[in-house]
Amino acid sequence: MPRYWRCPRRSAGCGSTDLSRHSGRLVLYSSAEPCLMCFGAVLWSGVRGLVYGAAKADVEAIGFDEGPKPADWIESLRERGVEVISGVLRDEAVRVLNTYARQNGVIYNPGDQ
Image 1 (cartoon, rainbow, N blue to C red):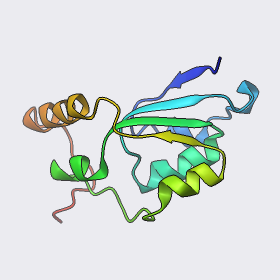
Image 2: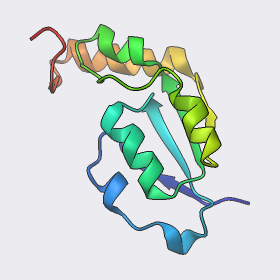
Image 3: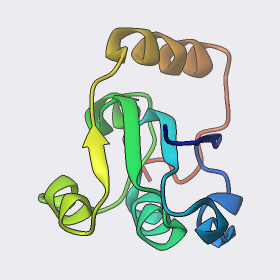
């Protein structure tokens, strides 16, 4: 059974942590599809699975700019041995995003600038 490492979305530590001691069997769970920077961190981290809820469009709908990730990013991860499962509890993840926006959560790198 794989080990699970829970990483908060946008955590700077995701890409810089050496996870090789876990034999490449870790799964990263995220509330939303990774942005451009987090996409790179997934590649470098050594995780072998990515499970996420909200899509890029959902995140950008509240004002974030997720960056110009390649259209085939999921296939790119899969080619490198990372299993990707998308849309898990998407409606719930979108509700969390909308709550964050309503509560005036910080929107870094807003897309409307």
